[in-house]
Image (cartoon, rainbow, N blue to C red; front, side, top):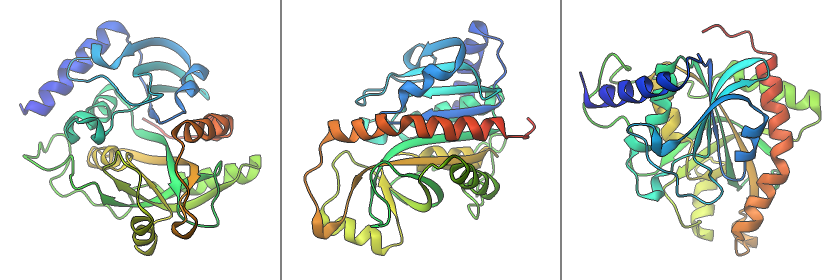
Length: 277
């Protein structure tokens, strides 16, 4: 048995001692969006650092709890906050929760996060349904010995974000009058925000939005055979020729104000789902 699989087994055994709940969907709630977890009809909530192998979230506005319950009529397992590479954790540490979600029974992963918007047609408060990504984090959670029981050595990335999920979510946003776009996400290590020259480069590479998460979790989810949906909230505009100093509290504030729209979109997605475990 690989060291990774031993960690997954220890974590799932501990969680199953706490609850016999069988989740269908894993959910990750990012910066300023953790309050969304209050909408879940919870049956159990466990701090990250009380789960074997997991570590504590140190990021601003991230509560750091794993919440089990029902949302939109579906059984979910939600991270209230997430772990980041910039916190000093390894790629394997920050993606272990996704492995645990899969082992607990989740067939799909829904992620949310706060991002900077580089596409001038996208403004703060808009939601972006991620269609593809560029990994500039300088690392990959799949590096190292591969456990074939967890996933293939060379996972295909032709559809990292499930196209049916993307189209259904875009349709639901239109139906509910929520400003949403489809776009390409670029992941950087952080924790600093980017320079004007870097924003210009990233935009020319084909990215619409930039953030410091999502990609590691996506890679592990795809490796594990999960379907993935990622929703990014634009919290600040990053136009290189009109760049202003970033205000972290304002970024969190925009995420908080956009949370009701994101919540409506995710709940509607779950309510309209006919996925089978």
